[in-house]
Amino acid sequence: MKISENIKITTKLLALAASMLVFAIFVMPPLYDAFCEITGLNGKTGARYEAVPAAIDTSRFITVQFVASNNDNMPWKFSPSVMSVEVHPGEVMDTVFLAFNPTERDMIGQAIPSLVPFKAAEYFHKTECFCFNQQVLKAGEKADLPLRFIVDPDIPKNVNTITLSYTLFDVTERISKNIDKNNAEPAREG
Image 1 (cartoon, rainbow, N blue to C red):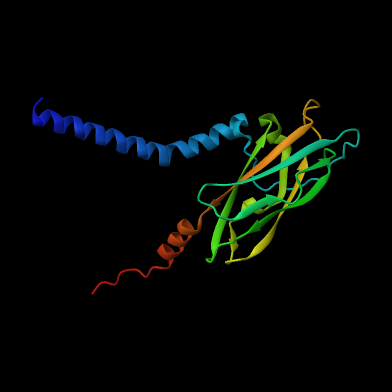
Image 2: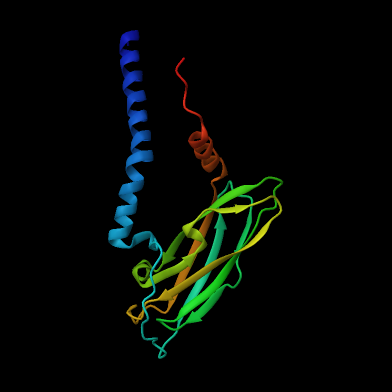
């Protein structure tokens, strides 16, 4: 092969790699969110739900299990206060997750929820959730993170157990960069 052919192939491969990176960062997340919203796959739960009084179905219980995990880069201790609750469909339920920042620096965490079975996602409504906002914990600080939810009475009869899991991510650096960027003074013309 000639050197010019190697340069052409290398250039094409670099362009392809850059295109794949742009696609993965900017195109895939919105497509994935739309796909999950339409299909209910990945058990993504929606945003804040405005509770409308509904009849409570006292004829049955749904077991809601809670799971907490940390992203690889998150050093916090993070766990549900209880492993599961039994709730009547339509009943408002409150629980908390526990967070502890054992590090010597202030940090910001963001929890991302997921729910299974996937078909239950549209029937699981959070009216209050720590996942709606970033959580700021100072070095050595502990916090109770509230969760209030309702399982819709229209949930299919064959769904008896729901597992709600949260993965906690460290977003300190990303948030700090955005704050620094927003607080930067505009350049002065001289």
